[in-house]
Length: 113
Length: 113
Image 1 (cartoon, each protein chain N blue to C red):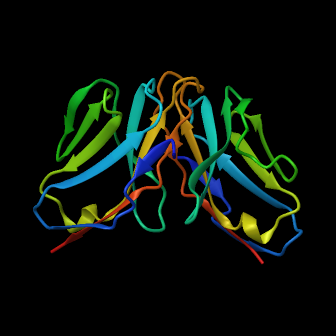
Image 2 (image 1 turned 180 degrees about the vertical axis):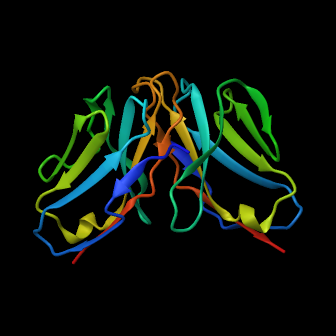
Image 3 (image 1 turned 45 degrees about the horizontal axis):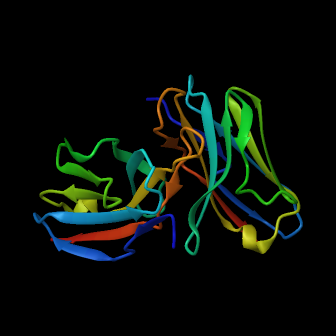
């Protein structure tokens, strides 16, 4: 049963610390998405990759957030420095290149104190 | 005006009834429409997608699309308590990258025995 995996599942950190979240997309999926979900804003797209190339990161605060795909099996989302307002659930999703369907990972629940 | 709008609910229906969830979108040129279900504390999971005007049925779920009126709906027949969740509508807007989805805020559905 192919699934998107994310680590860590939970992260508590202090303001100013660096946070790195990792995602392993479903094998064979060429598109990878990073989302942030909060009660107030709902599900927001942060970044989007196709074949490891960044296509759209317009939803991501550029000064502190960065997203990369070092290889086809790993996507990372980094926050440096973290702030309390970054507290949210961060989801990674992947999809096959010829379809628009997206399959979500379990999420990383981040709390910045 | 939000790009994808949903009534936040909660929508409460008795077990066995039909639940009707609605979504409107702002871009008349949108082509692809998706419904995701999200249980509390879990990640969104794809229920259905629809591309053409009319109805699309899958088991107890029916998606309805009316591009002229810019709305898409999800009907759940014979609602069960296990259907209680937040339902997210997602749209691929015209002019955006293939696969990039804009999500609504979601409608909370409660099915009571």
